[in-house]
Image (cartoon, rainbow, N blue to C red):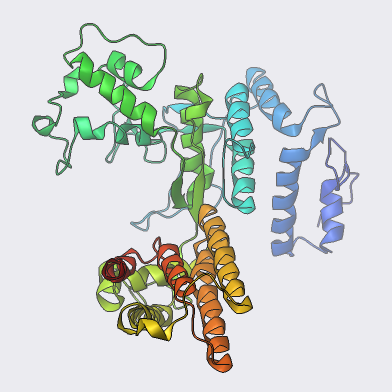
Length: 468
């Protein structure tokens, strides 16, 4: 039992008052300490809100946000000998070998991602729709939330694969911190690494560049502005100038596609590190990230143990590349897990085959006299042409926004409906199809589906080659 006591207010939280624990107990109707689930919910919500929007109301730091006052008070207590640093896992952690993990007190290198000026520069970039596109409001909210809480990050480890920390080679850069600006390397990799050289054998370098030649002065000249051409470099000046031009041509990175679970770490770190390396050129920072969820198979989680599993090669062999891409596009566009359905892939095979046959029938096999021609269009010809134009614009907008499922709806299914309605009206009215309108529709269809089914497009292009 706990004796009744007076709550001492020290933090005020908007919407919760200055006694948030009492507020949450009353809100969740917590009757005793046996209501463990409700107590956990109350604690998590109160701690989160208290830290992010709470304001101190007592002590020498009254008026400060809790997030600002907490590190100050921590340092003051440690300096006064009133506290000692202590770490433990938030909950029980078990390794892959089934051993219980503990926190070890070791030296560590940190990146101070929460540093005020650094963070504010990145946040300004991310929240400006003119400089950054998250493609989804929910994703943008996740970036903003990450920038609010991401502070010091342990960026090294002493085991595993990775790049040695340049100034302390007993450490390896951990995977989430590494490779955050490797897109810049892509722009010059054709000079350094070339093709069929996964191990980075310098003897295969297309520009005959040695690893030892890649000094800080070289990279500064290639990637940064305001740096002079290295005078003592073994790399020819012409090659360096070409590499610099390549980088300036391709950067900034307009789009990177990744997984939603990397927003709270790797993707945000990439934004930070671009802002650090190119602090004087924000126009070179990433312009857009598109993130998606994981993929399910027939509305169930993919699992080898249950047999609900497909590899990419198996999928292509079973359904073809285009039908696989069709089903992937139809699987979903949001942060929710996408659902690849075998039935959709099978239907795509039939739909693509039927349309290919119809296109051949009307453009190659049919007697030209069975179609109308000329500039005299009836009302339904104009309606059909206008609907085709509308769907082209709508599909373009969907693809620009990385909404491939919506694009598929507009550029394939609704485009088919428009054709079928026009064809049905002509049949019922005893009016021939208009050849120019039909050709325009076919051309629009195969171009609209190209990002999703490029191989099918190539096959239809041969038909057009026979016609013109």
